[in-house]
Image 1 (cartoon, rainbow, N blue to C red):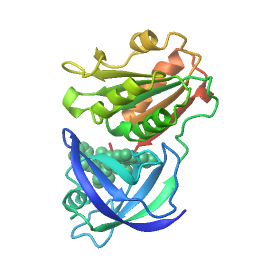
Image 2 (image 1 turned 45 degrees about the vertical axis):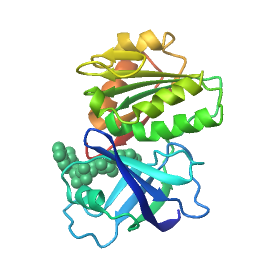
Image 3 (image 1 turned 180 degrees about the horizontal axis):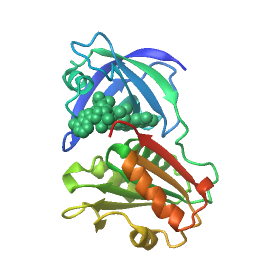
Image 4 (image 1 turned 60 degrees about the vertical axis):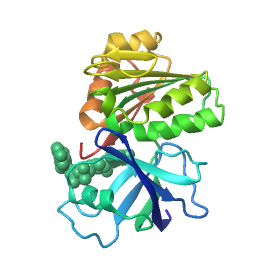
Length: 238
Ligand SMILES: Cc1cc2nc3c(=O)[nH]c(=O)nc-3n(C[C@H](O)[C@H](O)[C@H](O)COP(=O)(O)OP(=O)(O)OC[C@H]3O[C@@H](n4cnc5c(N)ncnc54)[C@H](O)[C@@H]3O)c2cc1C
């Protein structure tokens, strides 16, 4: 796997306490939508027991000019340093890794059950599928505590507008969800069945904090979904 130093180009807020960071893409660097990289701070001014490296999914699409990651800005040494990193400063990237990528069989639907910052690989996959006009039917149920904590909502609404095969369902625990197809509450079997009437047909992709991924897997196994059709990306540290 190639290791490169990459420069920070831009940073911005993408949801409550959530920031996106754009880095230059090294020449010749290729990855598949849904993969991640290990990002290491170079000579950071502070560190803690968790060290200077974190894994982040690449939220950009592979043919975007730059690389983009997004993260919840918690009060850890790594994230304080990342937040304050000046534009033009470099971090070390070791990538790409992982196989949380869209399956090849175009007639098999994909269902993404995504919590919080688990949206990063899914954003990349749906951006790429939309741009490449892939025929896969893709349904995303994206769960957040509130509308304000949902990242990339406007991107996801744009993909849903442009991609007739993509259904975006925004789910919030409290208040009103943003977007056309909106649900309030937690994702449960009844909510899933409303958007996925034949629950045995798709391949399911679960991503987000470990507790969310476990809860989604429980719903699917109780509905007798074949284990082979459930793929997961657990974000450690949440
Ligand atoms: C394949 C993969 C892809 C990933 N992709 C992403 C991604 O795209 N975006 C992303 O943000 N993360 C992603 N992660 C997780 C990421 O690597 C970090 O683990 C995560 O961001 C937490 O880092 P941290 O610095 O906030 O916490 P750490 O310093 O790593 O602390 C971790 C531990 O401290 C606890 N902790 C720290 N701060 C708090 C707090 N404020 N409240 C409660 N508990 C706390 C955590 O529960 C945990 O036990 C990914 C992980 C993997 C394995």
